[in-house]
Image 1 (cartoon, rainbow, N blue to C red):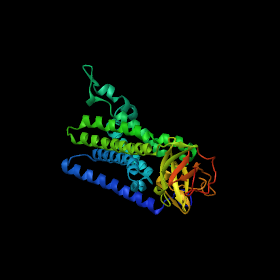
Image 2 (cartoon, one colour; image 1 turned 180 degrees about the vertical axis):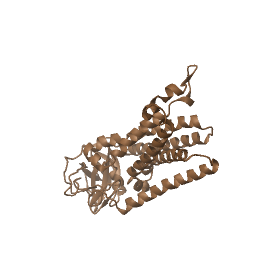
Image 3 (cartoon, rainbow, N blue to C red; image 1 turned 60 degrees about the vertical axis):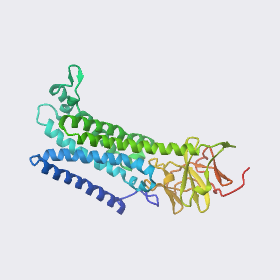
Image 4 (cartoon, helix red, strand yellow; image 1 turned 90 degrees about the horizontal axis):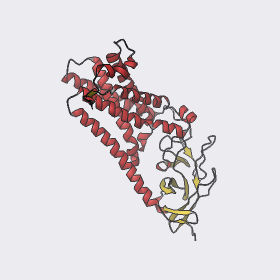
Length: 355
């Protein structure tokens, strides 16, 4: 959404984003095809398309999964989240091209239905066990890719805000966390496929480096958040808990603190302090990593707006986030542990004496 709380349309930023990503995809495919033809001039066009789209799609899924934790570790990278769904749809497109060409080349010329052949070919053509020992070189990797593609299709098909509104933010978010299941299937698909078709250690090494990077960034981001949560645990007084210093909250920005296990964003607006939920009603975006623009809290993910005084979206929209009562004592901000009733208006709090 824009600052006026309208759905984001094809604005210049979105076009620029897509042009850059599209250029990257075309460039990556061109480089792969060029290098492959130099190394192996007799490689067929079908093989170049199958491998090129696979390599580019795998690279994109790693980029997609790294954006979230990177933005948590460094807020300057938050703009990358703005159109992350576009990356997902493009990645699905590459995976679909890879799947179609692979199916046609390896399964469409037999008597069996191509999709059925993908699921049953290993029963008749390969030895899954050698003397009772699993043989990874013959393990069925194509069904893993098919399952991953099905998950990616569901995510791409429901990526539009129409589905977000109708499915509800919680269910929609849970559905799109399926990207991690798809990622596990993709890693298995690629790793087993490499074992069966390659002898070089380069590809296994790249798969390991990609997985280690994604896992490492997620662990680093989670560790940072846990460390922050521990710092924010404080004593309780008359239903309020001490959180942070008022000096830590700068004008137009927020300081995210922990209150009874819930993250709350403390804002400074026109010299007054306000506290709201840190979770956007759109996709659960981290409001505290955004800023106040034209008097409204603006989510850094897609620009949804809320008024800091009452948590309400500006008319005619009706989304509301929770607000919290706060007091300032000797420069420290104390927050009430329970949220205010929805829509409660606050005049804000400045430095005051509180006994």
